[in-house]
Image 1 (cartoon, helix red, strand yellow):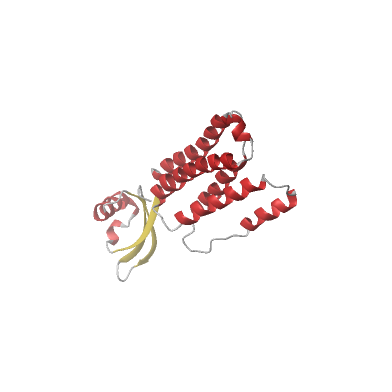
Image 2 (tube, helix red, strand yellow):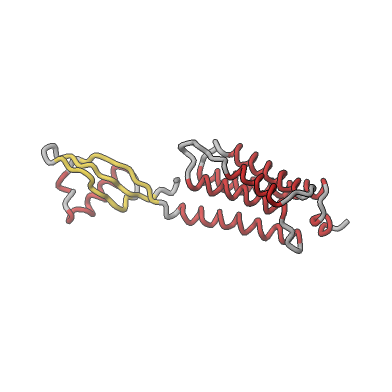
Length: 200
């Protein structure tokens, strides 16, 4: 039995091979890319289990005679799932969608030749995520608020000296400063400083 025929048929061995490929891709996408850059471990369990369950459901759909309406209704269940935690960011949601997409692709796609097709599709997804993470890591701008008590450096002509002093005190590469409030009587200003955050 050739690998090509095995990839096209619906059998336990075929599902297990696809499942192994899916697990490897999920590990690279979730553990090696998402966790490496986001440093969050609270969603690792959810991502892996969700990817596994969706893969198995999509694989089993091919073994039964099921109407398209019922299949769409099944996937609608996943559409109403919502993470209600405060820390679930847009990036987390994007990775969550990627996990679903990868699992569906690996369970259903038959791109000839099967081995090269699977490698190509999964590599595109993995390399896209890795490239964007590396690009955004070097361009990420963060900010925080501070109180500052040297009003003589708040003048427009002293802006370079202000940035240089704040960078020296904080150890950060500050690129921009915005004055939000200034108490003339106390000589205290509330500043928002913007800096490049390579650690996220």
